[in-house]
Amino acid sequence: MGKPLLTSMKFADLNLHDSLKESLEDNGYVYCTEIQEKALPDLLAGKDVTGQAQTGTGKTATFLLATLNHLMTVPVEEGKKGPYAIIMAPTRELAVQIHSDAEMLGRYTGLKYALLYGGASYGTQNEALDADPDVVIGTVGRILDYFKQKKLNLRNVEVFVLDEADRMFDLGFINDIRFLLRQMPKVEKRQNMLFSATFSQRILELAYEHMNDAKLIKVESEQVTGSRITQRLYHVASDEKIKLLFGLLKHEKAERSIVFVNTKRVADEVFESLNANGYKAAVLSGDIPQNRREKLLEEFKNGELSIMVATDVAARGLHIPDVSHVFNYDLPQDVEDYVHRIGRTARAGAEGTAITFACEEYVYSLMDIQDYIKEEIPVAVITEELLVTPEVEAPKRRDRRGRTPRNNRRTGDRNERDNRSARRTPRRRRSDDEKGEKGSDRNEEQKAPSPVAERAPENSAEKAPQKENAQPAAGAENANSGEEKSSAPKRRPRRNVRRPRRNSGNRSNRAPKADTPAPQGE
Image 1 (cartoon, one colour):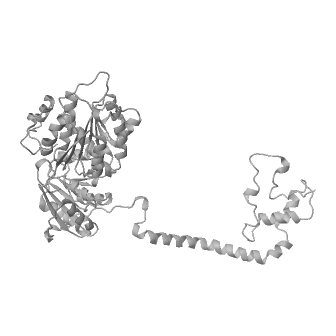
Image 2 (image 1 turned 90 degrees about the vertical axis):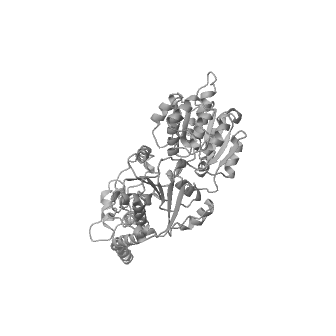
Image 3 (image 1 turned 120 degrees about the horizontal axis):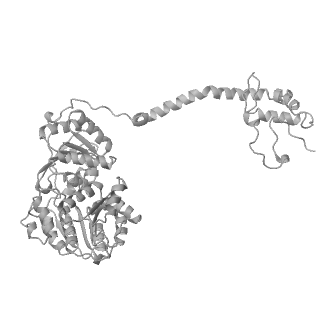
């Protein structure tokens, strides 16, 4: 939560439980925001609400106050066991933020909370569930996981909250959400809240299907983006974006900034360049372990880090106070991502600056973004002073496992094929020579028996009487058909002299050895 701004309605005038009013007073929250002013009276009366509001307007406090007030004022039937409230969020970061705000607002309520999200060990989360929590806050996947393990009971849920519903659709969670809703009490027996920054027909259909005559509340200005956000656009070449970023960081005097990029590779490059030049920066992307991610966010909130380079994993739901600047280093390809990115600044009545780079690679989405926000982003001129070359060049990243760079991969493969062909050439030539030699000497081979044929009668004279060397000659020819022609004595292949490991079948059905003449038929 931030410092709400602000209507004339006071929290003290609402029908809130005394424990909630006390925690609000301790944290300096006196006046409601617009979404709180419009939604809280209906929610505190037990009605279902579908709310639309921009990020940073106090949505989280709205549904948390309504949820906690319900649990504090509605008695629990005997024999029932929690959790009594389920709050679902699309991302781990948002779930962690909601849990933190719930602990702050519910400090004096005595309620217990469980935080469930993927990417973390089950140990701590198992302990939280074993403690019989009143409120479960988590991501859809982990909540579903615990339900299927029969460690999470949904039969006694009295309050259900779905935050960032539009993001749930984007991430493909909606079928899992519908499944979990069917495991809860009927719609009439629970209070339902759905909040989203944007609305669509599918969200309204979800509200109609799983909510009880929900009241639709919209809080939006004529601008989709916040009016307290100063937007600016620079048309810049891709190879000059890092120079422009350094120049703006120098001239803007940004105290706490988020630099948004489209790919992890670019995030690493920007971070390494900033880090090499003395900026206290970190990377927040999808492959960062959860414990490390939480530590980075805490350091960023505390001011230990001044710049966070992030992919869109951090674009929604995170409340980081006092972010002065947002840099769209890469122009987002999703129009809604632009709104959510710049919504990380100017939160809860504060002012902020959103600066966007439009390069030749991503400029094609600019018109769609401006159509969506219903305004043109002011274009600024790039001066020489704004193009600052980093003093220290970031170390170049080496490809993992010695991979050939993509641009050279085809050439490398061709060279490798040529080398393999060169290595195989002598053997192939020898094979061709053998074929020619075999054709020219075929008649001589038939006249003169091979050394194997000559030795065969001697080695097997005691085993079986033979006619003239008709069969041994054939066996010898087969034995030597794969051998190379040379003046050296011929060696029998090992597979022809090895004995079988097991004796199976009748002795008369066994195949004759290769170096032993086959017995003639009677």
